[in-house]
Length: 638
Image 1 (cartoon, one colour):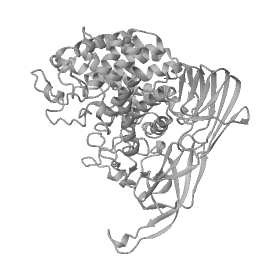
Image 2: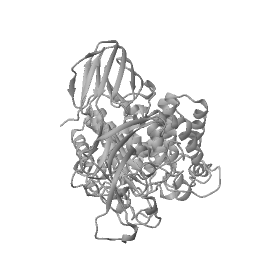
Image 3: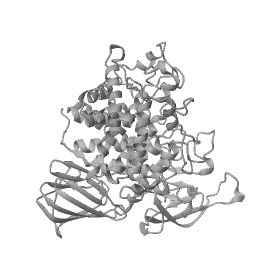
Image 4: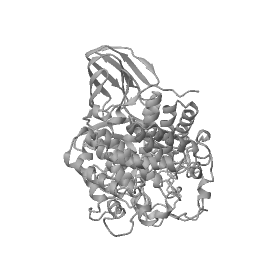
């Protein structure tokens, strides 16, 4: 079968200006906090934060400083993602000082690049004779892929070719190296180069880069022992030891078209699936698209948290088994949800199917947004659904869970990944397709479209009304109808109209001449029950309003949240509080609290007494902005 090609593309960042009550708090953080703070962190200028060494490593690689490499082998990628975030920011908020800072960083990368185009400070400094000799662990192609994504974004934002040209030299090296007989079956340990080559190829107009991305995707799993055999080469260099090849972990257990379940390291998997989608739509590859659809179905139906988190195990940051989604020990790395949103964005753009927008939205509003504090200088790497701070003890199975956001990490992949996602948020909001304009997320702003300028005003997700004003032009307007909406109405110039519903979107046809469209979505707060096979949620319910998952916090409900039971028959009430957490809707429920008897011992034979309680829920993404304390998403039901 042929892939469904709709000739659609995400709206260009330069054609969107967001001004949203919910997302505004995060997009403002990009310029006011995230970019300057992360730049200081990458330069080791944040007191009390873990050392990065990122910029210093490049200076050593460039021969401008003496020293050894510091950090993880993929440390360079943090700067690459920061540059990508800065590039996106520059498209909607020009800043000459930031642009100069970027130019200086790009020149440093250029000076650290070797004459043949190679760029990776770890191998340049520590193992110059072992380049591309440990693809499983070395992360060279991962680093280069992120650099390429940053270069494509910076060229699009500024028109400057310097970074693009630097990375084209790297891409040329890769195309030459990995099409030789020796490396004709090789593929990377951590997927990312596929995404970088694809974007760079589009930006530079070089099809062979895109062909190389396709080759890396096609090779994966065809020779499942490639990583084992590379250890036999005399120039092989160890990074994290030898042996112990886990093919599931690396998604190389089967060729990609034969993979039916999401396996292994969740970030790697999400990046691979994103690349598969890119290639499927670029080449009209129906079998590859079918594989993407199958993997997506396995994730959302069996291996995804209600928050859009994926990768439930702290051991290996990985997928495990269907319905294995523990609450307190759950991992759900922030980068993995970024990757899931990326994958869904590609599938949505290519197919026009609204179910991908539902999942993309869930990941963005919950786990991705939770990854950064409202102050913009603290971050979550791990996103469990239940936290008891006293149990998060180092040296135990719970040490990966942090009850408060951290100022930085030795492995700092998540903070700049969150920054680039928030800086490029407009690219998730809407889609252009010929003369058509599709509103994928309900975010206030102004969008320049083939239909003319479209102004969107909404207080979503606090309220369900979305008002649009369309200045003029032809084409169709497509409004997403999310799966969680109970009822809806569409009014055009004040008159209720019927719209064609297809693939989760309502279509209205032009012409348009300063028309107004009011889209009324019914999104009351609701209880959510899990599949009975999801053992961690047995006997429990969660609370959602639209795409937003809610949680209990100790700040509102006291300690020992496990003693609370919610009355699902009493209903839910909501209240918008402008003074709370930057302005948010809280949800109230009735229930009970078990009353402990301290004299009864650890175990007892009498049923505990209980007393009435009012339960207060706040958005999951906003938890831990009022100091440390307990948190729970799933609550016992009565």
